[in-house]
Length: 176
Length: 176
View 1 (tube, rainbow over the protein chains, first blue to last red):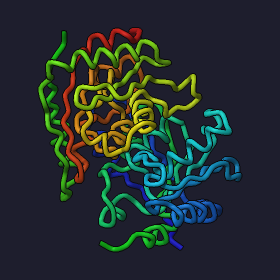
View 2 (spheres, each protein chain N blue to C red; view 1 turned 120 degrees about the vertical axis):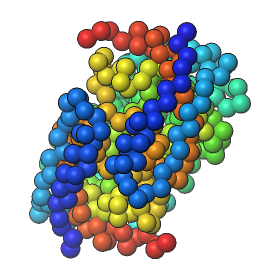
View 3 (cartoon, rainbow over the protein chains, first blue to last red; view 1 turned 120 degrees about the horizontal axis):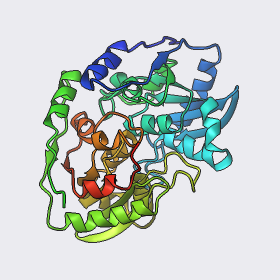
View 4 (cartoon, rainbow over the protein chains, first blue to last red; view 1 turned 90 degrees about the vertical axis):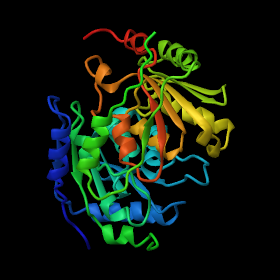
C-alpha cells in the first residue's frame, strides 16, 4: 500500500511568487484516512474499464454518490475525463451544493481542466493516487499541479491528499 | 474598438522557470484578424443572455458552428461555463477532430478548466476579450492565465489573441 501525504509546498510557494500581490487559497495537506484506500480502490476499478485508465469516485459522508471513468473515445468527447464524468453523474441526481461536503477520489492527479472543475464545484477534499509527475512519462500531461491551481485560487480552500495507491494506478499504464 | 495582441511573454517565461526540464508547448501570439471583432460580438451577445456574463463561439473556416453561454445557475452545474457549453454543443453535431481547425472566441479569458478543455480538444486558436487580470476585480478568478497553461503543455500548440472588444466584455460586469 502506498499511503503518503504529498506536501507539495514548493509548488505553492513558486506559484505565489509567480503571482505577487494577490490573495491565495489554501491547499491544506491532509493525511490519508482509514477509508481512503477503500474508496480509491473504487476509482481504480473504474480506471480499469476506462478508455484511458483514469477513474474517479465522489464520496459524501462515507457514501459513494457518483463514479466516473475516462470516456473520451466512447463519448467522442476529449473533455470526458474521469473526474468530469463523476461530477456530471453527481449533478444528475444531486444539487451542486452537496459537493461542498464531498471528497473526490481520482486515480490520477487531476489535470488543469478537472482541477478547475473541482474548485468551481467547491469540492471539500481531493484524494489522488498517481501524481502528474509520476504519470507524465507514461501519458501526456499539462505540467501544472493540482496544488498550484489551489494556491492560485483566492476564493476557495481545498484539502488535498496525494499518493494513495499510486503504484496500483501507474501500473495500469504501459511503460513508454 | 479594442484590438490588441497581448503577448504575455512574462507569464510563459515564469512558468518555464517554474517547471524546469520539461518540454513546453508554444502559445503563439497572433494579431487580431479582420473578422475577429465580428465573431467576438457573437460571444458578447451570448454573454448578455448568460447567468454570469460570459459567452463563447466556435468558428471553423468562417462558419459559426457552436455558441455557448454561462449556464451555471439554470443548469445547476458549476462547470457550465460558456466555453464548456460551446464545446459540448459543438460535439453534439461534429466529430472532435473538427475542433483542430477551430477558433474559439471567449468574452473572458478562459479559466484553467476551460483552457484545459480547449487544449485537450486541440482547438487551433483562442481569441478572448477581457483578460483574467481585467476580470479579477469584478469576479473571482483563478490566477493562472491561458498562456501559462499553454506554456506548460508539451504536446500541443495553440495560437492566442487577447483583448478583442475587451471593454465591451468588462462593461457587462457591475463594478465592485
